[in-house]
Image (cartoon, rainbow, N blue to C red; front, side, top):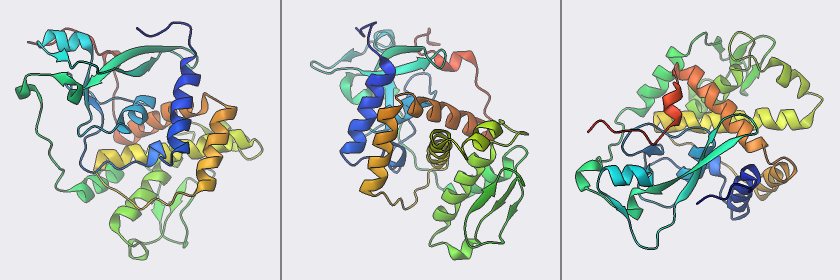
Length: 280
């Protein structure tokens, strides 16, 4: 059982800090060879902070289910296996925890486990993500650096030829698309962005939203890009999270909103519930 009186924000933030201190940046891990974390039976992907928590475990597959779902399909937890805590965010301050198990921790009917398939056209998916974004800002190639300013609402990015790979190009472009969702015609984080110019904590939050949102989009497309992580970078984010245990939750939530907007994803209340009767 999950204790009622623990500070879940602090507990989960400490877990992410521990990953960072071990040299793992949770929002930079590889997606190759694994699916986006999802519930085995409902097929719904996990969202927000739960993506970070589940995608950084060491299982061969990112497929999970609850104990009651196991009971419904006649499965069981293997002896000695412990659950993983994920959360539903009811509000910025209220988290509802529940427990899930990876399929590797369970005895299950094998016919329930789908074969892992690799997307055969990830670059095509990248093109479609960009092309289908609602109210996408203009994309131009005037400068030698990636550039998005909320005032003129234009993404300025180097031509593809300047990049070592097409995946590097789209990784940069995805980050800029996430940044552009701050515009008042989209998700309207304009006040936060403007205040961030004098409030470093808000600037850090916006930067983290963009990094996590880019990582989420790369998961959808099934692409990888070269990531350069220094000890200074890791120390920086450890410091930020130690001073604000909510920053990673807020960043993940807003990054998820940005990705939903870019993809045109409609989310219903049922997408947050795991334990419902299955259709068999």
